[in-house]
Image 1 (cartoon, rainbow, N blue to C red):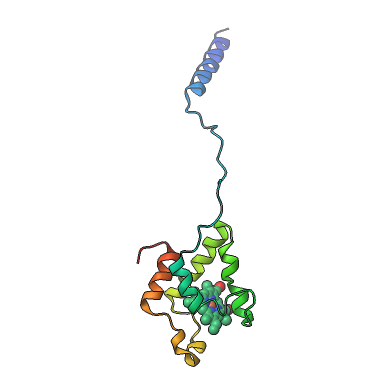
Image 2: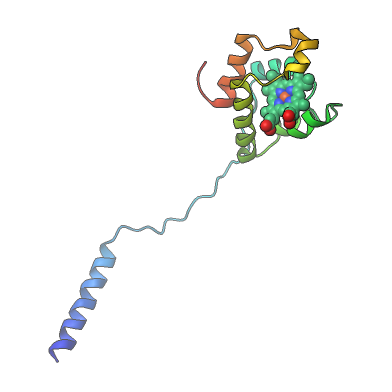
Length: 128
Ligand code: HEC
């Protein structure tokens, strides 16, 4: 009989304890807006001049087109856009784009420090 009492007392305490727990069943809100923010105009101006030629759907540069298509990036969902922006940050930080071979023929295609800073500020989300 004593055992039964202890058992039910414990059960009762457990119920009280669970009732007192903070509620954790608030529904998880799905991301309402998963569109990537538009690429700023100053960034697109640099891209048009220095990157777009090789990185668009109609580009004759097969490898460049395959790796990055700015038109696609503009309409990409946030997750995909962020992954691409990370890649862009990497190539900019490593001075890998435009490709060196191309710059040997067309040195004016090189990014100025200002242009690079503009692209990096956008792609990395850090201020210039
Ligand atoms: C002359 C053509 C050309 C220009 C101009 C050019 N790229 Fe590229 N880009 C390429 C090619 C080719 C590749 C593929 C390189 C490879 O796979 O080795 C590439 C690859 C990339 C990649 C993908 C890297 C990876 O590892 O996935 C990024 C990001 C990129 N370029 C960004 C840029 C940016 C930003 C600019 C402008 C500042 C630019 N590119 C200008 C030809 C170009």
